[in-house]
Picture 1 (tube, helix red, strand yellow):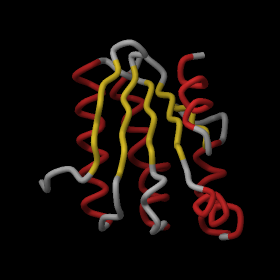
Picture 2 (cartoon, helix red, strand yellow):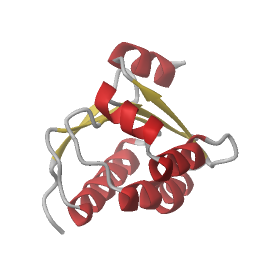
Picture 3 (spheres, one colour):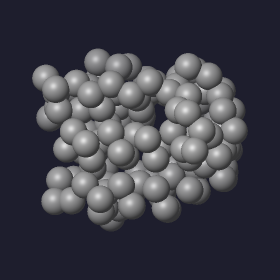
Picture 4 (cartoon, helix red, strand yellow):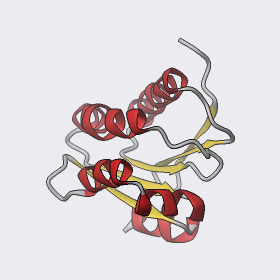
Length: 135
């Protein structure tokens, strides 16, 4: 497995993982990164995640499909009985792509649906994202 291209910090004061990508990466690398995030979450018993994707400019439909339909449900079942909460911290440009691209909107709508085994919300402000995780 490749080394991770994100930072993963466990915040014991919030019982949350803070994950930040500093740049884009290919799909296989991002999948390895998410695998490392789940391993850290299991190690710390942390089911609240802040995923900072503001510096990742590429938006892959394949990653959107994989995270919402495969990875997040797997992570949710791995962390049960805790409920996985995912705050995604996005740039305004990323939010605009989500709003204008029908494929991205499809995966986003799917991932945000209340019947998922996890809760996910998008934020443009880190304070609001952390507040949602701690509520």
